Length: 217
Image (cartoon, rainbow, N blue to C red; front, side, top):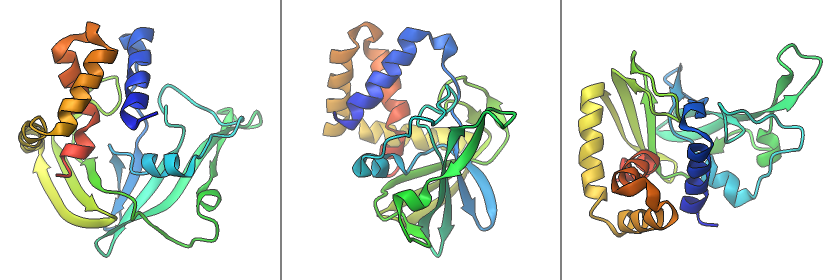
């Protein structure tokens, strides 16, 4: 199934279940110059699909982490590296009911470091004060951001901007994306699968879930 279709089906399922129950998602982590930031991007998703990784039966999935894992990343020497990937495993002996287990060696046996050469996209790092909370995905707003554009694992641009500057930057990038064949296809697919959500719903969905793509252009 195409990536877009999988994402669309998940979003529609969440919407049908009830928008009120949709939940803000646990972030991956990004280390930049020794500082650790929440990351509103998931660079490992395409790699896990390529590897056909499947969660073990005893893995814990919550509404706050639909993808089922948390990855930690680091930018070193102008490149993006995967440091660790953990999943939650059921553990009745633990007060929380689960423990976290690293699956990095399972994914990359014997590797001491993993350069993310599969990844091309934009790492979105909210590193300021939250100005608006949205109880879904990475929808909350902040007063400052970092945007790290990556191409095949190499950092090509590292931007620092206020929340207002980030909004303007995103609008400019999205306006350019709307003129592409990729946008046209995504829009047509969404309208076919969810006509009841209308034109505005289709555009809002694409603007949110394709941000990683058009911000990297």
